[in-house]
Length: 360
Image 1: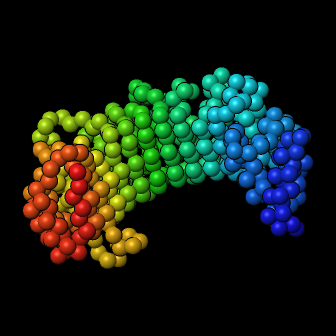
Image 2: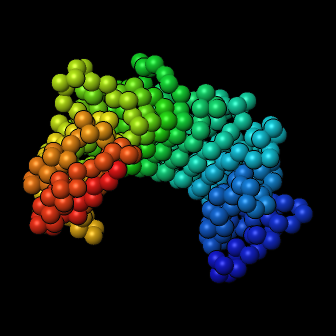
Image 3: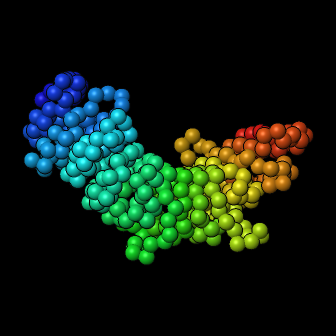
């Protein structure tokens, strides 16, 4: 059996040759397990501008001829590039996706709008996906309901990142919760309701470790609080920025403030100044040494704030009781900070082993 490095060289020579992709490589995959990383390497190149790519039409034909060859394909990446107007290319790419039933890692950065329905159908048929990255799918007209529909049976899905998705109304046809138990969820540049967000975690025990929401609209403060409570026992990383979260009244406590004492495993918090107060500092309880994250630091990055939203005196009071080890607080650019209060807060923090940074 040839070393993997040698197989890579053979494979790259075939790809770079004038004939393009050689279907024979797939045949080798049936008799030599060492070709597995070659096919994995190949599928990471789909549509890439950085190197010569295989002849996708020939690959699709080869897989249709002998479907079991597709068992070797574990990774799929689709990019926007010079062939974006070639419909034969995109239909062939969908055929590859339809055959690759053992895909574990999939990235969709671009797809031709004319194959939209076939793409969604192919995605719905997958069952082994563990990592899914959907970028700028707004150009396909895909909304959060449709995303949840095609991944509803992906029981093994652990990581989901969705960027630039459509605003949509509620769907009554979807099940209450998806079958997967996500560990990492990222939603950027789109709109999602509380019900839609809750579908991403199971009704029983959630394994969600990391939540990243950026430039997301549609959530109410109460909905977000319900979600955080559902994931509180396992959530380690929380990133909230540029999100419009609406409260029922000005007196309603922000969700992050309200749930902070329940986030016993939280290690990293990154949140802008729009959706929380100093209570998220004071309510972070010190963690037992056995629960300390790798490196031993629980860090919080907060802001930018206006002086009205968070005062330096509130920071001074908060560092007396906080369980955060590293705190970075940013105020709006140009704001002049009281040097004496900054020094006092820093001194108190230092006496408690806390690294505090106050900046504007």
